[in-house]
Amino acid sequence: MRTTVGIIGAGPAGLLLARLLHNAGIDSVVLETRDRAYVEQRQRAGILEQGTVDVLREAGAAARMDREGIPHDGIELRFDRRRHRVDFPALTGGRSVMVYAQTEVCKDLIALQLAAGGPLLFEAEALAVEGAGTEQPRVRFRHQGREDVLECDYVVGCDGSWGVARKAVPADVSRVFERTYPYGWLGILADVPPSHDELVYARHDRGFALLSMRSPTVTRAYLQVPADTDAADWGDEEIWDELDRRLETDDAWTLKRGPITAKSVTPMRSHVHEPMRHGRVFLAGDAAHIVPPTGAKGLNLAVGDVVTFARALVERRDTGSDARLEAYSATCLRRVWQAERFSYAMTTMLHRAPGATPFDDRIQFAQLDRITTARSAEADLAESYTGFPLD
Ligand code: RFL
Ligand code: PHB
Image (cartoon, rainbow, N blue to C red; front, side, top):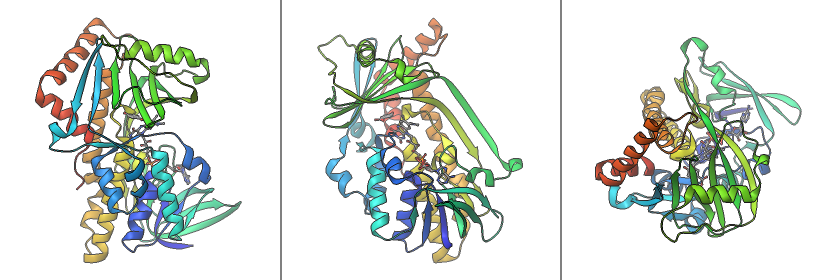
């Protein structure tokens, strides 16, 4: 098999890249190790930055998002039983975000890709990427019990944090930057309308809580828990009681409870692999970087990477210049480290680490006090949350 761009992974990064290339008249093949149902149901992100929304619209992949997505003009910070709303458009000159689940973004992109007849192979596991330093890199893969080779001009590893593409970057040029947090998130989905019309991020002495949503009838919520927690150890009423405690306010706000339909625990870590390119092999999305979910940046960074790659490849085709492809890693890493900084700051401001001292608590309150009283600090949060324009 032969193609211009071999894409490993049909998460948001790989699927959107295939769409952007198709729109530009460049052929690609997507290899995905899982089946279609698994990819379409994996519960993950919920917030699309302004730039991501714009890219999906330009790519012709936003029809359902524009009907069913819920635009949000702010978030609420909760601490010390107080509530503070961060007004995004007022602080950023009109930027906002959209609540539209990653599962739905993936469903929409898969449907478009298959309708366009674009090769998207499910249950096709990439085994290795070879010849990264040559003009013709190859992906060895297994599909329907048979091994095959995909010959490419470029390979883009969109294969997530456990993928194989990263191994194509030799160890002696790779650097990994990492931090593991001493807690995780217990996430739930529940058949009950959201208890607030925007997302609520709460700092509490018992730990962080986040109230989010998937639709006008489905609540998504998270609780900070020890990293080694088994979700099955938490009973449904216990989860609602804990959310109630951590989200409590001095006013008449109440938490709506309903049947919990899914529960899982996610570990929290920050991880960056540098560089994001070796020869003709490029890394995009979680394959190159992980952020803790507190800043809602993971999916949006994945979108940024593939937009940068697609624009660089179109420039190469149209002008013959490799300059943007060669700058790919540096261009993406600048954005990645801004997202790492923001996600780290949000995480450490809102979570209570085991062994946190009264000094640590006071620093958290001072940070929250600053954001809720100094417009410059609040604008910095709003700009980072809604995302910086893509270059
Ligand atoms: P994905 O989505 O992990 O997709 C990688 C795909 O590659 C496949 N794969 C392979 N295919 C072929 N051969 C191989 N050898 C392969 N190895 C792997 C996998 O099966 C998979 O289909 O990576 P991608 O595309 O880079 O997308 C990244 C996002 O999924 C991720 O960053 C976000 O979900 C992170 N995230 C959030 N991001 C946001 O922007 N906003 C949020 O609100 C948000 N909330 C979250 C999140 C992640 C969470 N978890 C579970 C980690 C909330 C949670 C709880
Ligand atoms: C979600 O709805 O899944 C979500 C929202 C905001 C975050 C993380 C996750 O920061």
